Length: 89
Image (cartoon, rainbow, N blue to C red; front, side, top):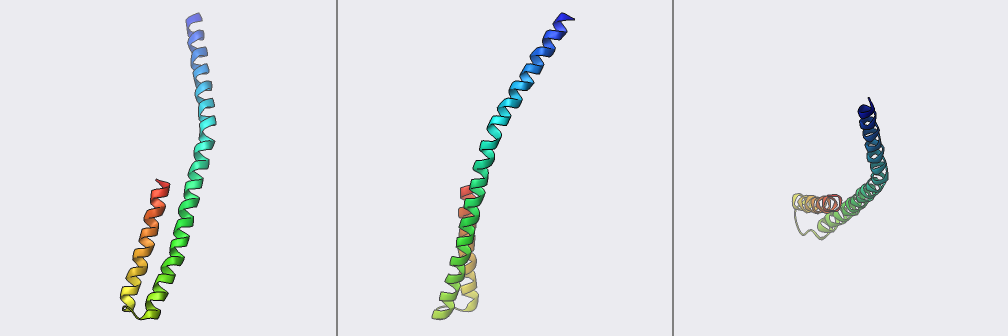
């Protein structure tokens, strides 16, 4: 009986310590992850505007066909998405 009581106390203490460690580390990780997501969103939003400007400049200069200008816009947006992934992961 005494041996069982000691095992229970050790197990309960281990659970309390583990829970305390998780409670301390979880908010810091969540804050860092939220900041990374925010930075990724900002990069993508900036990229969208840059892609629009690129397409408008391309069409205004009549450098390429509309299809080629669209492809340039897609490429610009894809580069921005990759930059956002690099920030987040």
